[in-house]
Length: 133
Image (cartoon, rainbow, N blue to C red; front, side, top):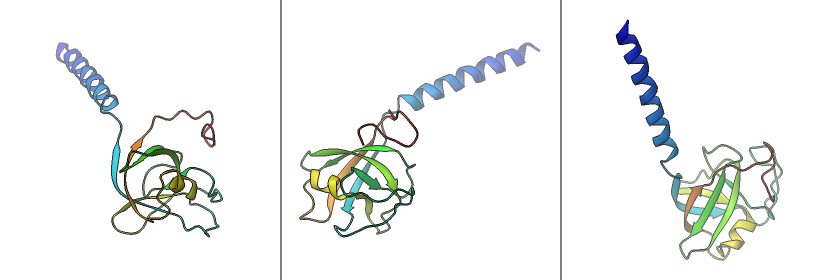
């Protein structure tokens, strides 16, 4: 009977250690090539929102809708975007950025740009509305 107590204590301790390591693992980073939506694109996103070229949004293949990313270009410029669409579906690309985000990164004359995206902690006031958007 005493071994069950030790087993339970050990499992509880192990779960606590694993949980702490997961939390302190740091932010997830993605690196690769970003593109941006065509300047004439008008349509809906995979999340059901209408695409707005004036908002700071992005498409990613697997990140949950509402995920906030800090996208940093090679030259150091950065912008915060919210994932609200799926894509890009072109090999080698990690993000499709809205026109506003692309302008902020000064990539509209290039079309493609190497970027690093870091997942930001969620600070939403509601499930559907990110702050300041």
